[in-house]
Structure formats: structure tokens, C-alpha cells
Amino acid sequence: MASLRPTEISRHSKPMRRLYVDVLNYSHKFFDTRNWNLVTASKNVKMFISAARKSGWTLKIFIDAVIESDESLRKWRSRREKEISNGVKNMPQGTSTLIGDLFCSQGVEVAYSVEADNDDTIAAHASADGADILSQDRDFFRYIGATYKVYKFFYFEYGRLILEEYPHIPRGSQVPSVRPIQVPP
Image (cartoon, rainbow, N blue to C red):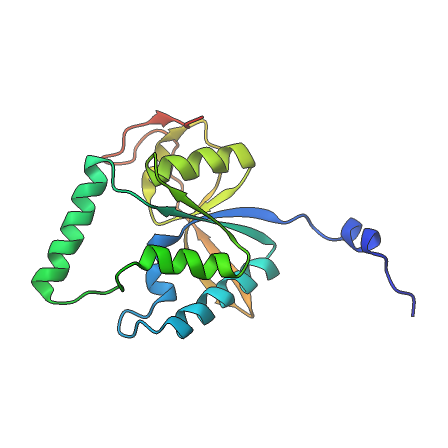
């Protein structure tokens, strides 16, 4: 049986697509909210990465490292107040760092958005790099001139990553409480 040289294999394989993940939207998929077991979280991250690769995706993880905007601060404060009033903390302290480290340890690029809103950072990078986005935020539809697809949910099927796209929302319009803006440079 003749073996294929690497150049022959690459000629016949599809190029990998880029998927930029707003990962904190999915922290509950990696950390079980009842059991913050780091070993289980690591297995979940590895399964996500493996399924993405089998499905033809190259991942880049984005994490919001600061709370700069009034909107972000209100959301953060509201979540913390709810945790206190309910007496339940769903995620471990330092979830952002833990999830970032788990992906980084598997060779996935992790970007922390420290000077701008994470949505702005992801939108700018995805537009510049021809990537698509996995996020539960509808803010990505406010950017005029964006070329990316936005996926809201994911699940696994036969070891592959299945992504569900948002229902059609016109770019830069008809998104309640979100003002249209140009994709940041």
C-alpha cells in the first residue's frame, strides 16, 4: 500500500475554519454548577477542543478580563446580588482564569480583553480574520459591515461539534436595546 506524503494529504483536506468563542457564556458547560471539579472541567474542555477539530474548526478563546462599561458593570453586579440573595454561587472564584488556563494548556490560543469590551474585541478580530463567533450575546448583530456568522448553542454528536446559528437578525438593526455601530478596527 502506497503512503501519502504530507503535501498530498493537505491538498485533499479542507482548510480549517476559525471559531472565536466568547467562552464565559459557556462556563457552565465546562464546570458543573453543582460540582466544581477541575478534573471534570479539564475533560470537558478537551472534549470540546477535540470535537471542534474533528468538525474542522480552529479555536480561539476570548475572555473579558475587565468590567469597563456601565452595562457590563450592571450585569456583573446583578449576577453577584442574585448569588448572594439566593445563597448560591454557581461558578468557582477565578472561573475566567481557570477556563483560560485549561484551554491554554491544550494549545488553544486564549485572548483576554483588557482595554475594550470583549464583544468589540471579538467582533474586530473575527471580521479581520474571517472567523465565525460562538456566543450567547446578541450584541454581535449591532456591528454594521460584519462578515461573521454567530452561533448561539453547541452540542456534540458522534464526537463532532454541532453549532446552532442564531435565527436571522438583520445586522445593525432590529436588535432591542442594542445600538448599531461600525465594526471596530
